[in-house]
Amino acid sequence: MNGRLDDTFARLRQQRRKALIPFLTAEYPDPERFKPAVDATCSSGADILEIGFPHSDPLADGPVIQRSSHRAIVNGFTVSRGFAAIRSIAAAHSLPIVVMCYSNLIFRAGLSRFLGECRDSGVSGLIVPDMILEESDKLRSTCARRDVAYIGLVTPTTPKDRAASIAEFGSGFLYLVSVTGTTGTRTRLDPKLRQSATRIKKQTALPVCIGFGISTPDMAAEAARYADGVIIGSKIIELIDSDNGDGHFRNLRGFMAEVAGRLGGNP
Image (cartoon, rainbow, N blue to C red; front, side, top):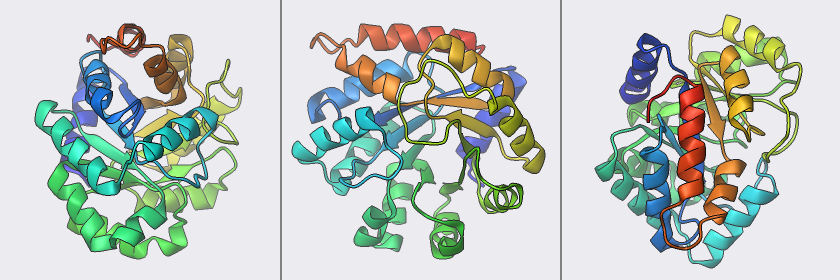
C-alpha cells in the first residue's frame, strides 16, 4: 500500500474522475528544460507523474522513448541526478510520482540504497518492466519497508491465473499494457482492450490503469471507460519535442488540458 497513491485514487473516485498519468523521460529534452516540461504537465491536469529513468538496453520502450533515453544518457544522466530531479519536482508539486526503470539500474545501485533514495526523494511507486514475479520477492519486500508501491504490469496475453498473482503481489495500481509490443503512439486501441480490462478488474481491488499506445484525447477517453486511469508516454515526448525552445510547452499544455477534460478533470 502507498498512502499518496491510495489517497489520489480515492479522491478521484469521489470526483468521478479517471487518473491522467503522463510519462516523461528524466532530464529530457535536457537537464535545463526538464523541470519546465514537468511543470507544464503538472499544471495542465496530471494526477500522477511517471518518470522514466533512461536505460541503454530497454525491453518495453518503443523508438520515441528509446530516442529520448539515448539523448538523456548522452547528456550525462545518472541515477543520482534522476533522484535529485525528483526531489525538485516533489518540492514544487503535490502529486504522487512513480519511477519506471529497469532492474539492473536498481541492483547496480543496491536494492536498499535505491529504495532509500526513492523514499527520501518523494517517490510513491516503482514500475520495473523486466522484473518477473518469481524473482521480485526482495524488491517487493524492500519497497514495502520504504513505503514505495510496487506496481505490477499485465498484458493482453498474460494468462488469467498469472494476472491474478501479479495483482495480488502488487500495490498502488495495476498497469495494464494495452497492446502486445513496445510503447509508441498508435491510431486506435486494440478492439479486445475492453475485454482485457474487464477481466483484469474482476481479478483485483487495485485501480487499473491502461498505458502503451494512447495518443489522442479520444483514445484516452475510450480507455478510461474501462479503467481507473490512463498513462500517456510517447505522445508526451513528441509534444515536448514540438516546443519552440521558449520553454512554455504550449502544445503539451493544450494536449494535457484536453485529455484531462475528457477524463473529468478541470486543469
